[in-house]
Length: 468
Image 1: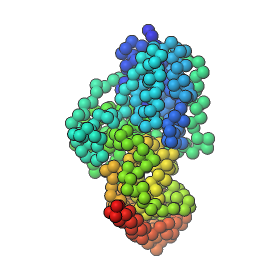
Image 2 (image 1 turned 30 degrees about the vertical axis):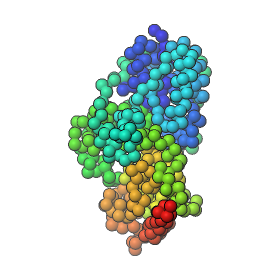
Image 3 (image 1 turned 180 degrees about the vertical axis):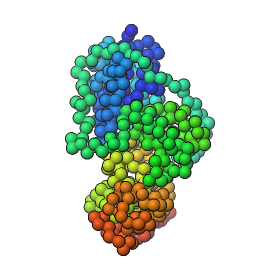
């Protein structure tokens, strides 16, 4: 049979794999290929934590392919030249891949598709990662949505889950491509091995993704609406890195959660937010670098000393719920979503640092770092984005902690210096008369005063806008 290259990217699985299935369905022997080309991702090449995850996910994919008689070929970019060399080497007649939606990647892929087709190759791309592609949902005027709720109402009316596509039992054997590399040659693993603690929490790859989904459905889905905001409880799916790397499809997740319709609809809405983030990024590609709401272009962000930014990054602000979240991030490559909002509010409102400081740190340290979601999340909390929380909404981290970690268990786990305090004192230890050895005695900023400063800064911008 003729050969077709199946170009793997952020779709590192064999189940529900449209590009692979298209090659098989059209009578081709698939030649699996991964091309490492971080320099083609514009201003946002993958961060260190993402690279560490990708390494293990690529190894898992290669193992799955070898179990079926195939293997993963690996090359280093440029992507177009690599695809051309690979196609010539194996006499491929077609190239198939699953789409990505980051602006730099969309532009690159469009050029690659044109170039390959001009040489006579069949080239096809597919959606494998979203419930709805970014251009599929629009308002009655044909414009992109800027608010989630009407976007999701329209999207739900169009939702049609595709038929499951099982992984092939066997695949044709593959001769290694000329100049092929190993996963180790990509040097994705941190040289200091700071990621070793991650793998006590995570199993990258399709098997790990399936396990996370099963555990979520068995142990947490039924109470998801009640427990998802409590970081000390195992109430979330922890599927975000698996979804980002395409180790599981959103369609499989959506089909599986239908076992519990009421709780499933709440979780499906979270998948909807993920789609909405890609919708916004596609239609407003400047948002990773620019405020969506340009009124904030003149906002007086503070010139925060590097020492305070480091205190935030390292979990030494003196605000326990903030520090617990930042330590969880460093230890596991992940942070609970409720805590992400709290630490982001503290950075952008109490410290009044530009949201890009936070976006850049999350990008480098999260294993689920996703450009669309990272951008939407930071601009949402900062008040500068689409459907954003109003800037005047400043999370009080102490009240948030008392509400969502009432016994201080999450704090005690990540900040053992405070574990000896009574639960009521863990939220604001500077008010406690007991010692807190090794932990900052006072916060790096006064919460009440900094909140007022943030509101004054916002009023300054609003007054300037009214005068125009």
